[in-house]
Image (cartoon, rainbow, N blue to C red):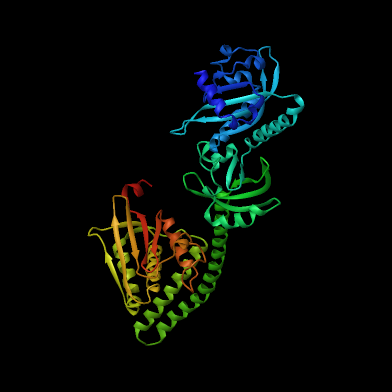
Length: 484
């Protein structure tokens, strides 16, 4: 066994540049147990061959040096490399530490390429020879200890390859082990939208840059937003970049929420002002209309129509006030099929003018919900009216109702131009509209009303095919409301 191994070492001397005057050879298992030692090992350690074999290499290393040795080994294996050099302090039989220079080669199986152990070739070095290397190793160990305790991810990129990552990086990229990060290309994690700017600007920068906004992908492919500081550095004499990465996904979401809240507040103030300006003259108009109705002899139908339209203006102004500050309203049982029939009848004339047919598909049984009838009616007025406006060339609007034991789904399906996917998440936000003259307030009111009725709205769309709004509302539960 030893003859075959010695032959292997002799035949591969060019892989071990330190072996020119080195008699100290060790072969280790993957767990760093010694399976072979050269005959001259006693000159270094004071132990004979048979005393060293089957012991752990850790037993002879200075504690901090062994940790550095294992970290170096893991990074080399993760990068799919086979060779590294470093200096260690080795304790001999009488307890004295000796500085040694080590060349380590990872042994792999020729067929399946799995790691089968290590070959260490060592030589003694004087304190003067090793001072700089020891200092470097100590500084490197201090650096790794420091960055491994940081909450932010720290990554070093050399060329396109990630050559170092701290422990926080595994949490950031949802990796189980650093092996899933170290040795990989930065482009395995960086979102493609940033490829060009990384190559053209940041890889050529001679000064620290940042923080800049980057989007990354986790090991499982999910995206997250980050702020990155890019610091030029060197790694083994090569140009490299140290990246300090902070996940800001939650902060960005909070900022968006605050912006939307500010928009909603502004919309509410605007709506309140408009509503009050409308309601003041409406009060006078309704009063004088009633007086004129008593004195003048004209067709009653005219007065009824005028009064109805004034009441409709008043209803709209009330909805604007609802946007500004939701009011306590009268809640009652609502026949959903009857309500939608009434809304369809109201908008049927407008639909016919646009060559649109409203198709309704309802279940046979009665469907009852509990809420404010005026507000629920406003929801379907907004949705059907929007569907008519996006179909200038005519077509069909389908209104489908499906129910289960606790909830009812009402789908309003149009055959309009559709909504691009990147705009879907903005639907319902104030002042966002796909219509040229739209304000987005109608759909915002719709979302607000549905949420206040403990319901949800979902939207799906396909460009040039159409859009589907699905409203889910709880069915009336007599026992639930009786208990209240």
